[in-house]
Length: 122
Length: 384
Image 1 (cartoon, each protein chain N blue to C red):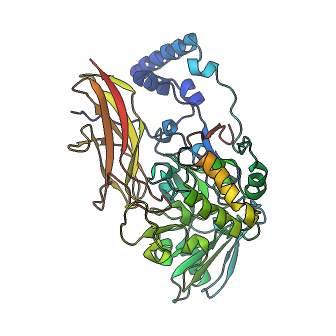
Image 2 (image 1 turned 120 degrees about the vertical axis):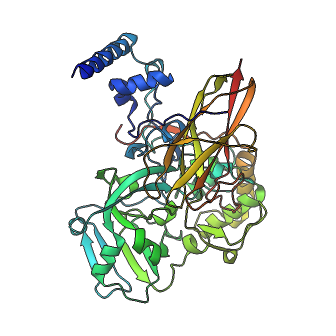
Image 3 (image 1 turned 180 degrees about the horizontal axis):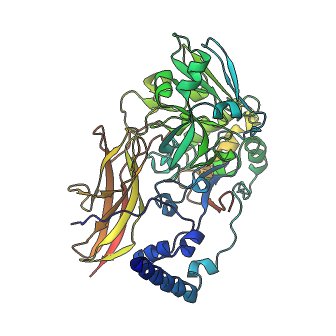
């Protein structure tokens, strides 16, 4: 009992210290986070953006593409796979779409950052 | 080189709970850390894919439901638990349609185990491969409660010729896109599988497959069908893109960069042994212990040891494993590193599982970047 009181006293002191100290520094400046799924990246501007929007966004957000770092060969395979699954890419525009994807999301792409999002229920 | 230190308590706390809980606050003060902000790293807005940030990953034995990674193949039509039924069809004497109440009336079973996306760590695969560029956090450890697959199949009267369990969820892709239909060996799923409707003692959240999902301890997440609507024992495996092309593992190792043909691979099943460093100081001082923490898991029932090296893997010293462990669950670990000389120290971690598999320096190459388990390293600047 005595021991328990001593522990409680120590905890109370510690709690008091926490209150006096105020919130931890990184609490003060925190901006609210977007909800999961609320914030979506967009394809970069360019002549092929409209086609990329039309071909890709029916099934998945642009994020799925923006995080890739693929070679021309890999992008060609991806575009062909997606066209086979119904992505609206006219045959004659596939090469231009691949070039756009390689330009922005080629092996050197380090621009993608995941969105820091609020957990469900927070 | 090192002195092991006891790992942290098993119970995870939100930052708010952490600050409000004095004892936990004292523990935090002792390691000089403010708990990180509860958040997820969203990789794909839709279908939603999000991983647990590394600094939140290893803070508790059980990963909180709201911080557990989320992976979707397609946008699901979330079933209404009031009208949802699980159909049991195929090679059975008596097909069933079980409501959630029917399921809950069966004997309960639980498993505390790791769920890891097959693609966790894909971002580190070299050469680079397409797919969600998961880093560390497409993994978590939870207590899954429901009913045994075996009990459900017994009630339906499983026929002798069935070898594979076909599984169907509620996520339906548009038009010509292949559906995420799967199957797995009946022998495994009948022995260990659970149809779970609870996660960490709460009703299974919609993002995690409510009303019920399949749990396959030790096997990668592609087997853990969410929004489960139908199971069907069959003599032959399921066919289709997600069986014949995706989620396959090479029969024999090959040079990084080569494309294995589908027939040179088989269905990916067990997780590979892996250790992740979830917390490490950026700086330390010669002669003063600095604590690293992490998690380790495997497709084998337990982790035997986790070791760290500061000399590129020439010598290794054991970490202290957390007390909590269950078959196919992860082990928390901690390691007190006392640097002996100033400069940059690079620490590596590797795990060994209960079957003797040792985490390799480099992962097994496959063109989809599955089950990356190469050694992770962290740099610590050591001052005098």
